[in-house]
Image (cartoon, rainbow, N blue to C red):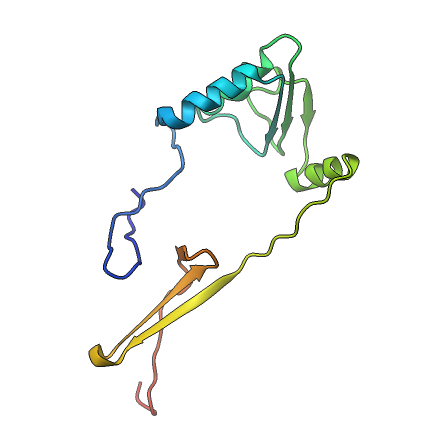
Length: 154
């Protein structure tokens, strides 16, 4: 649980996070195909991970322990799997990926974060709702507070 509720009018459902914290297991629907892919992989590129949160950190290790597989870690700090990997790069992920994409002669698609403020007014109830929203409709926190002034009244 995030401690927050859904901001969609009339919902008020409890929001759940999608991250895996220390001591939590992945759901089988996520873990099983990930493990199957790691078992079949002959290359694993880890970008910007401390490789300390299991079971997710077990997946690159599976690849790194296989004969003939290539295991590469890109991270600014040391990881517990540095000795296991074949290629270790201490750099920013964006810098490495830009160089790799250039070497592969592939373009990186542009991306632009777009966020909006959604304002709705219910005249009959004398209410106004204001909240942040991403371009896909996902709500996000943007405002710490709002001060409304109408015709010189605070």
